[in-house]
Length: 529
Image (cartoon, rainbow, N blue to C red; front, top):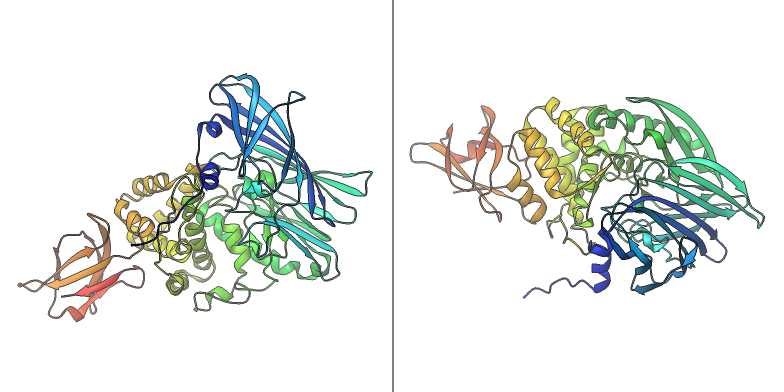
């Protein structure tokens, strides 16, 4: 008997969309926070501006229980609240009527959780640079933005726009998302940086990056016109900026080709140096790969193609399209973010080095697949699926490209995906329906097998009495159907639709050893009778 994964009340409060969360739609935040680096202490407020989706008198927002809620103000007056785990429940003095745009302000403070291994665990990353100056960043994907600021902490509700005001000790700079609006010298030895985000943004993408930065800006000629690119690096690394410039331009060239225009022209594109490895913070990508190609100098594919570009620039920038532009409604569907972004690495290679190199890279990444559990996690408890969502997800998408058998059509599908779901949140069904419609191929059971189950399909083959090849799929998924490219080793392959029932293909065989199945691009097993 297998032990089942247990989820707590806190998991459900965070992951489930109850009426206390769906009753209001977030439209605007103004996060105003002071960072006391010496004491690892933060204090400040967040303004919630929302539109009521139904009549209500009570709602839930989220803030980790180790941080204090000092007061909640509504129209200038304190209103009652109560806490349960990391959830905060606010009661209003009268009914908030459906359709009303209203607001409240949360004042809070405390010592936020310190990340011990950012970005894999979340919180504040308190570090110093080589000169001993503070170098601080936040990273909170998965764990949640409420680890450091009060927010409606659910991926399904992206705020339409936001102001991020951060006060830091004099002599340091804070870099956050969007565009810098103003720098204000305060009286208490602090300087406040105001950053405005004009595009919808998920709250885990909101970031602080505090350090002794130098700044270089350039313009990129993109599909929608000039795009500002900003590089914020430690002053000691200013001479290394050309490495970032080369990789950033190559990345934007490749991804605008395959996926369409960069999704956040209004907020610009930034690379911000951090002590942690990296994170896809929208319009302010965190970079910590130490100015080298590969993933800290390594190539997980073992092909060598991954050593020709900086993994963190490419991968985290890929998330601007998949993760930031197209965001999953529930963390269970984080595979949407990571599968497409893993695959974006292969398309970067395709654009700059050719299709054969791209296919080799995808195939090489198979060595990282565990097939330990499904790529999709359980809904409603803020839980992602298997780490296979990276390499196995990329392999799946390359396989769909092979099935589509038309690279121009495949490119239009990927660009159309970013256009249809521009600045939107989606789920498993949205992506599947779109790919089915645009490819003209029913991929329903393919998605179920590769994303919702852990094993891979096995192509069973046998020779019929009249010398033909008969095939079927053996899988966990009922009525599994998927095209596959099969032929003879001497005669080339064609695409045939195979189901879970034996069907005879127009291929004459003397010996099953002569059958040639494309197992390079199809992630499958084979079995002969």
